[in-house]
Image 1: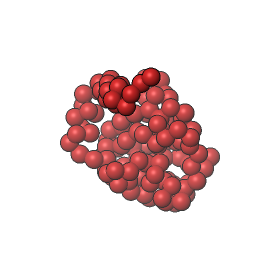
Image 2 (image 1 turned 90 degrees about the vertical axis):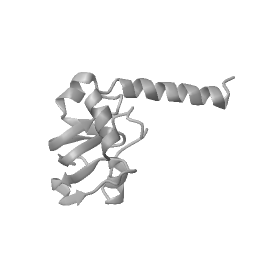
Image 3 (image 1 turned 135 degrees about the horizontal axis):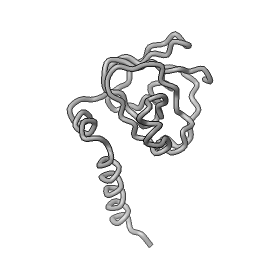
Image 4 (image 1 turned 60 degrees about the vertical axis):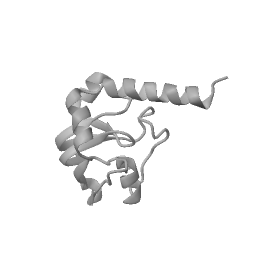
Length: 127
């Protein structure tokens, strides 16, 4: 039987492991400043902002965008949206996409990933 103390230690260990796999530039960027900039949804005619303690998925929901999601942990890929364009750095925090897919910067899991920079334009064709 696992105790809370052991579970917490494992959680911290997994977080360190997940963070260690991120490029150093993104780890440093995350520590220096919160995500900022414009989030554009041209098909819906919306521009939204994301709070420092808010995920993109939460901001989309708050803006009354019908989103499909399940896990809110970057595991299922249901909340992923196509990226039309972006300025800045993308921090893909999901485990759904492969390293090659993340490097291509064509989709973003809105529940966990972050954008550091001026703007990102997302496609909401299926929403």
